Length: 74
Image (cartoon, rainbow, N blue to C red; front, side, top):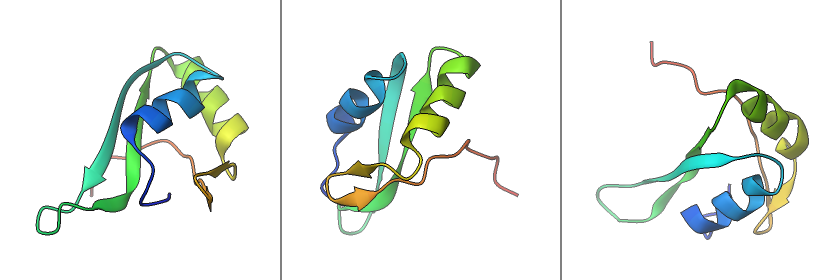
């Protein structure tokens, strides 16, 4: 994900295909800059699967997105 992508930009891009309930761009604590990944929460599981199918590999702000389901840390 581009370091220039904002939460509102994510909401707009994903909102075209499904209902977005929340977005979060991970920020580096020391520099205050984006870390290059984000989380998008959807209204339901079907919307999440639609987002994965439609937007994985899509270009947003000059970079290709890798869209997948978040997994718990191990």
